[in-house]
Image (cartoon, rainbow, N blue to C red):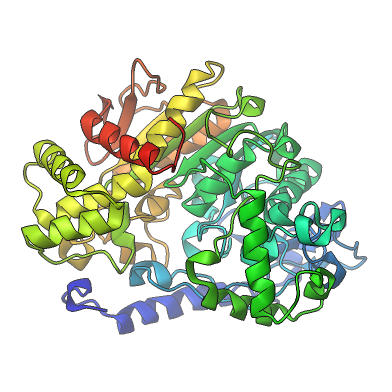
Length: 547
């Protein structure tokens, strides 16, 4: 890592020490950490589970919602877990789905990642609630983790749901599900009807978790008739994909997509090409698909690295599970979820989350080179973008200009496009936000990076690693209170308006209202409109979206 990524008085050793503190906290979840008589016990359809209590919150971790996905179940739709007779201990996170360990991210995020063992027996969920069997019908919020469609887990310590449960009265659920080639490898053309669902089994896992919620969440004081699915980054892409998949209809009632949306899906031809390349990496012929079910998962994961960009994974437009247009929100929003309200948004400098993003000063030549390479644009388009962003951000230096342009290219323009298409259906609101409160870490060089708002939404500013991302200032607390209340009120009612915020109007083509979250929150109509249109035009020309 370059010196530009370091901050005085803050280094990797300190972060690892913080991670040790987090691990120590997780160790309290171990069996025997408290008397069994004091531990909450709940009934599920498959058997009884024992969790732990902490400050009025009942916590259950590693609850099975599906059977192992190994062997004959690999690439197949999820199966129910086997019932059990004894009371099952559920005080520790379950196995992560097989994946490669994350690289290339800011260290402040890496220390929060779940490092539990990997296994194909990974269909587990975690619950935070303040009530059992009390019939209070709390709104349920099911969180889909980040990491694209290739990595991550619901065990990231920044996803702790205790504050949302205790302070805001919701039942919080996080999940693990299949990822990368084990969750999104399209094998139907090579292996036949047996593998018809293989390109989307990672999404089908999420739907299995939603079915578990429908069948069991009343036991935990939750309302199965009021479920919000939400997620950040890859989690945002998952929940917007779910909006276009018929199996999920009726299983959720609101959607929140933070810094991640899904426009297009992988085509069947693209998916088949990726599958063929993986099989070649493993020494298998295209007609040996069945043998893929017997290859140790470690070998499949190892085969992903050499594929580079060719190993792109995500939902597949298979004509069975995902059928509309070019994907979930292209060329239009999915009609099957037209009545589902949503919140969606992004942060000001998402791109600083990636270590490849420059943080130190760059000259004019480097700015132009980085824009041309990063956005794949010509000289004229580069000059137009620089002029537009200098007009909108006159105080920004070259490195900040690049971060702003790269961020809008990566996420912000697509958020606006998804909101516009959702609003065009005219049946449910889309509320758009932009998170702009900077973090002071790295001497402020990160600005407002990807994942920063997660700590505010979860009201977790005092979590074991959260202040590594947000800083330690008391100025953080009012904004966390407003955002967490807005998110949970939306989950409860479908409306994010709460005291302390300006009136938050839904987004529309005629009134592109965006809530700016900062120390002073404000509603702005179509911020940086010319820049948004310029980026969107580039995307259309490059075929990233339909016009």
